[in-house]
Length: 205
Ligand code: MG
Image (cartoon, rainbow, N blue to C red):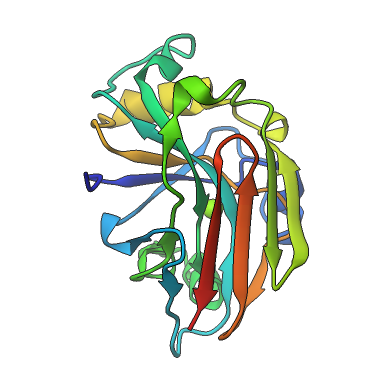
């Protein structure tokens, strides 16, 4: 099923703040990617004439039922699956938008900018707040982190977002990326892994 929306969280790991000149948010930073950007494992990331594109490994959660006004405590009961997500970003376009105070939809929402692994049942994931994340480009590790290092817990994120918008069945939430984001160029193979959740391999063409 195609999700209605992909809810993304910006700057949810302290280590990613400094490398993008961002300050510690006092509330989650929320933006959307369109479902038209989704591709699967082994799909190709296509970026032509958009300047530098960056990888961002993230834990994705898929919702099994509509969620509105959830509490932090019951937030996870709305989640049916987890997956590995790569929040591909046209960084130069995003930075230009940021510095002008404009939205960055285009920078995040281009076709193929939402690679996601095959979802696994959330019941098979032992602890969503203790998952290792590792991303490599052409076999060289670029990003490493653990979901225990999130600034806002998953419960907080879901409660916060669902206060303002209904998270619908099938929607995806990408929960932010740790440090080490960096460029991808044509010919690169990017592999994002979250042991216990999945592996996502994509080539840039
Ligand atoms: Mg991101």
